[in-house]
Length: 92
Length: 383
Image (tube, rainbow over all chains, first blue to last red; front, side):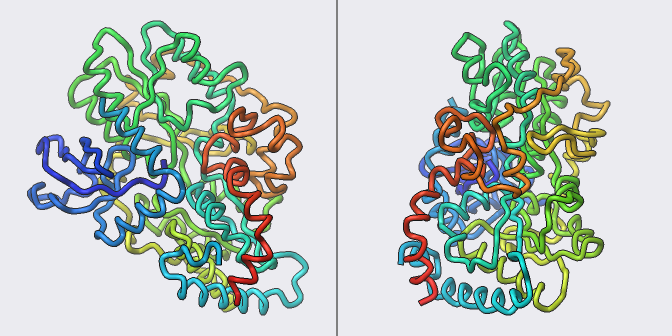
């Protein structure tokens, strides 16, 4: 819950609600971009960016190295599978 | 080497371990007890156990695993309240998976579900809100849990519900706030700590400024830390360096994620939707002033406690359970009478055994392996 999970923004789903489609370990789901979106900037700017996602909300834009390192730690902590399962469940 | 070689940069890890050893040795001269450093965050606790960090540190440093696992500190009375709400026929009760197995005085949410209550695991509060949209004839309740890391997501979901005029969604709010918690730790006579590893993702939301009182008033160093083993070693080294220099500052080791001022959007959402409770009860720690939040008057329509007239009753922990003493660092997980016997991750008696961020579950999962290899790892780490 407190570690979050890195994902890559694939597309923008809803500009008004600031929702993007984020790919996390091959699973795609809607994620709120409201905490990372800068005012006055188009959301499309974030496509292909990596973000750290906490319970469905992107909380920080990160670089790819950071994303890969975090994914490795999550896998070793055994949290990767758990998060992905929860995500899949929530998306259904 | 069993663990250090797995770190992102093993060479850097070895240098840090040597430095930590040297500073600890100098600091230990004339000391009668170890240097006690608390990691506040449950994510750090998990990482520390997984990577066997305690075993590569010198004996003169003791890590105290703090109260930063939100699931672990949920009091039994609150779990009972959850079950009460979940068992109402009109309710769809939604929760993060972590909270399903936390024992209440009679049952957990998992048991309530098995008995027919409509309890559903969700990944995000937004999933709960979409259930409310899809089921207008049902009452969807979201079990809000966690420190400031998850608080913005709940706040933003409540804002969205109000914006859409959704009335069949409400929040059973058990969010807790970090600063009063750390203050309670500092004021507790049981705890004599030299410094802190500050939580990474809570700080991503609140920034570093709220910790200033720890350095200024309590004269303790705090280093906001990342979750990789190397982050943790580096942060410990930073705390030790401050101690040796006789300094007490707030430092940010995790500045690649944690901005100095936190996240404005998240903070604004929190301040709109939540206000501090007078007090909130913690499992094992008792009541801590201003440590929980509740919905502000403007959003009271979204408060499940008001909607379902829930009067929280405080329920004592089982007599045999020593979660409180473990949380305060008075005893180690394996020193608890029921650890690994009556209390296991499969059948947890106390909440610290439920979540992988709880010290007992983490120790149960990784502890035995480390003890067997302790000598070997220490030798290899310093060689």
